[in-house]
Length: 263
Image (cartoon, rainbow, N blue to C red; front, side, top):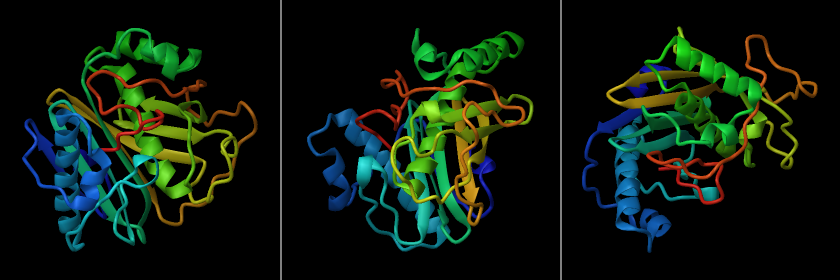
């Protein structure tokens, strides 16, 4: 399912249902040493998918340890992302010569817990989500918004090397096309980044088998971040912002939280 959302240059591997038992490398195991057994199984399942995806890409097998803020440290010349939620685990990778940044996220097709939407979205975004829930009730649009912002962060942080709060990513969901657009606002608010990514990003989403998945892939050479004027919103975007929240039940937890779980 995740492969349909990404360019042909990306290689993916996904598992529905029970995660396979997988012995991780010692360098990988350090990231979850002392953690609860459930978290260790999630981590191992994510690394299993990561290794299979790398093999599909033609990259020799090797450890994918956790780096800064828990982000996977991919082999040189590779970008990628790992995600997991109840009943689903996936990884996607690509060569950095073709894709500059890559982020994926999976969430259960369930409404967000009470009050979470209030924390992750502004008034305009919340109004749009509620309208979509009334018009197209077959999708949990609040959870989809959350997932889209997770994918954005997973693409952003490894490329830019700095934190991106949900308040700085404005998302416009495209219900009919299975797509969304993102505007990065105030890119200098948390320090000077590498300027690797453009200010406007595009993503795709899908829903099936009880899971919502989102993906953001930024082509190499797409250009640096150029901040818009304060309060500016791109054409078609929802005029709302979001802030990091605590972990959401049933998901892998938001990467923007203090303790990140990237997969």
